[in-house]
Length: 130
Image 1: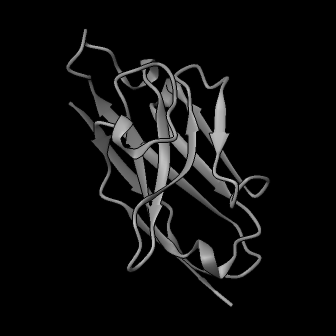
Image 2: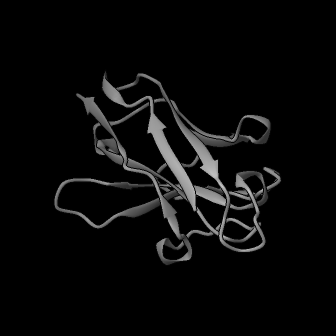
């Protein structure tokens, strides 16, 4: 199993920046692959809404994809040497307020679909005031 722990959330004003981190440990059930071998992503869930895709990154870090609402403001990255996933959040808006979840999947590719992920963190709250 891969264990994921998010950190870095908080309360900020609109226009501010935050950097979320996700520390990964353990191995996947398939072939003993570690976090550096598998795709990962960030999702978010606002009160009363479904959990939605934010960004994804391949195992190598070379391929990324973003939701249209965050493109140009949020950047996903990973440090495989440290088994860490990041989400740099700039120019934050009140509509970015949500619980942000780190996720990983047993494939080297990223994925924009929630059902493609097997491993989830507990989430970190991001609140953006206007």
